[in-house]
Amino acid sequence: MAEPKYGRVLLKISGEGLCKIGQGGIDGEEVRKLAEEIKLVFELGTQVGVVVGGGNIVRGSVISKDSPIEETTGHYMGMLATVVNALAVQDTLESLGVPTRVQSALTIEAVCERFIRRRAIRHLEKGRVVIFAGGTGNPFVTTDTGAALRAAEIRADVLLKATKVDGVYTADPMTDPSATRIERLTYNEVIDRRLGVMDLSAVDLCQRSRVSIIVLDLKKPGNIRAVVQGESVGTLINGGE
Ligand code: UDP
Image 1 (cartoon, rainbow, N blue to C red):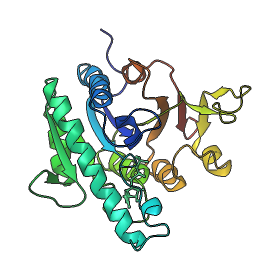
Image 2: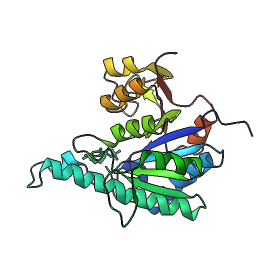
Image 3: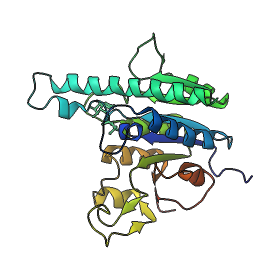
Image 4: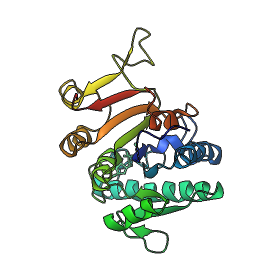
């Protein structure tokens, strides 16, 4: 088999990757499919870090709207939701024979390690998939920013942003049939055109740390491995080099 193009990747999965489309919570079958996709990359010998979102359970801005729950509390609830998701991904990966560690930005020592950058890199070098939970550990941002941060910290070759569509489109492909996929973009184009791929703070962070982003469809079988093997899938965002 050909050498993988990337030696170390950071995969960002939204909480909705863990449930059926249009639903919330955790669906065991969807988590298993996701774990199978991660295993395909792991088997290439590529080191894999995973950042999981929590939107399938709680989003801080949503749960605090017209509610006695303060927005800050809501964001911490969202961060805790990412830990719940991380544990589901962990056990499912391990049931498939993939060794893992969960590291959280919020310390919950009974269930996972806390995030320690050098230890995370060591786990990756030892062939463990490291699942990063708790986002950044700070309210008012999202796990996209957490993913950009962790990608920079572990010096990932690329940040794979898994979404519902296979890349960035000229318009919303769900509503506009004339929308076409854009193969390459620069960070500045994403920021200036407000393309809504990821939080702008996450794109900015990737630009500053020179981490390329690939936006791809999570639910297409074999897609993540195809990207890691260098196939042109989704939309590549970098400095234009
Ligand atoms: N969150 C936060 N700080 C972080 C990451 C997440 O406050 O660093 C909260 C925020 O309220 C967010 C929720 O956790 O809405 C769930 O994360 P996110 O919306 O990024 O999940 P996803 O959309 O990826 O499922």
